[in-house]
Length: 112
Image (cartoon, rainbow, N blue to C red; front, side):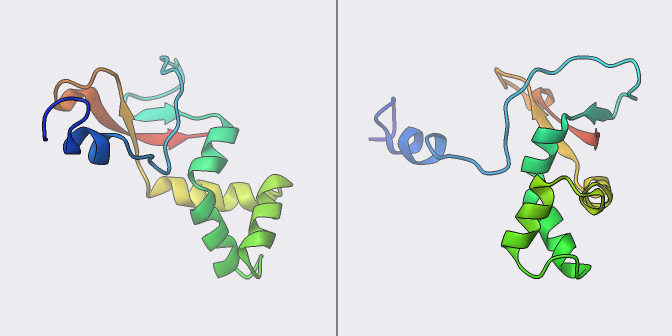
């Protein structure tokens, strides 16, 4: 059956968990431009954790993922530098529920 809550579409496609997502409140900020979005540090480190760990390993600041995670938890200064680099090339997709048309999802430049 394809239709309804018990259908294949609903169970398989809509019921799956998604990585690299979070839930928060979107508010306007007087310091941001229209294409920018401010993020709390906790959310930012969680969303970009794998990219930051990859950057730490690439710059020989960590030898493995466990050491990279510990550097993130200790909030070392190199983590914030790598985080700034990573965020420059990765826009955020913000979705306002209910998403009924294409303007319900928009891309923004993340700012700490």
